[in-house]
Every structure is written in structure tokens, then in C-alpha cells.
Length: 93
Image 1 (cartoon, rainbow, N blue to C red):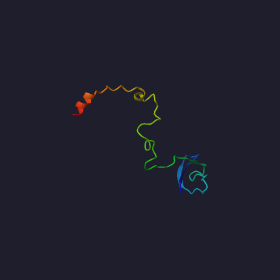
Image 2: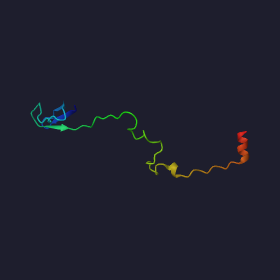
Image 3: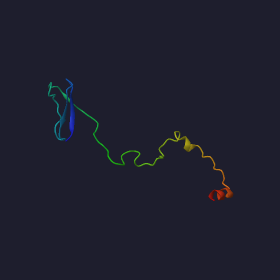
Image 4: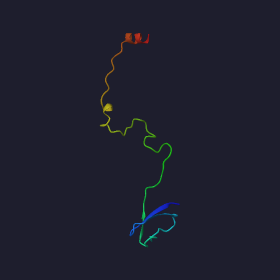
């Protein structure tokens, strides 16, 4: 059953109540008999395991990376020096 948080509009008293989804919301403050309002909090969901985060299913390079930020990809690579047959034969010996 969920826990609901209420706050009094008149005195500011706060309380947490465990209620079923079918229970009626509280409307009267137990301290001053003023009007209560339900406060909404963030949902307590925890994602465990792989596949929930952006980097879990993507490679290290992504196409969604802006081209302006990636200056190495936009610059042409320098041309490799030609290798002569005699140089490659002497390197393997």
C-alpha cells in the first residue's frame, strides 16, 4: 500500500499515512481541524540491471554526438607515406 503525505493549509502540520488506493483522501487536520492537502512526491522507482541507462546499449561512438563538438571526425586524416617493396621486405627479415 502506498504512503501519502499530507500538509495542513492552516497550521502547516505534516503527516504521512499508509492508505489503500481505494481509501478516501484525508481532509481534516488532526492537530487543528483545518483543511489538509495532499503533497505529491517523486516516484520511488529504482532501475537495477543493465539496459536502463543511455550508455548500456550504445557503443562508445554515437551518431547523436554533435558534429561541431567532434573536431577530429570533421578533419581529414593525413595521407600515409607509401611503403616501397624493399622497405617492407627488409622490415619482415
